[in-house]
Length: 104
Image 1: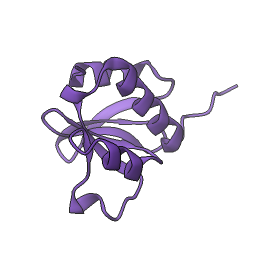
Image 2: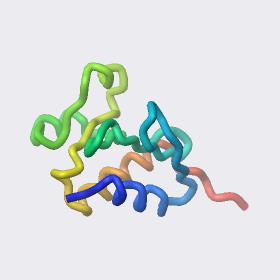
Image 3: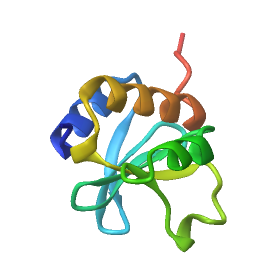
Image 4: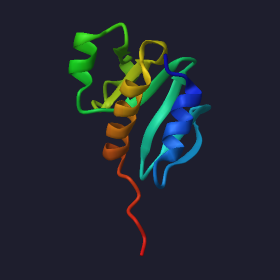
């Protein structure tokens, strides 16, 4: 079972990710929003697999009418995710959000 602390720790371990609030919830940004706590125990991430995830496991993955205009956003119930699945979701979301390029 994953937690909001697990999300925070993993997100902040990625290059260029910062934390700030969005809609009064903790959120993590690369070039754009990467992940945000939607409500207690529910995480918003970006994925190209939204339909497939929600179609095969609707108890874990879902979205609200608010998310209809953003087809890359999906909500995930943290209590139903193990760490490997959480990290996979966050890495995909990081890739989509546009990681900060190295300087030099």
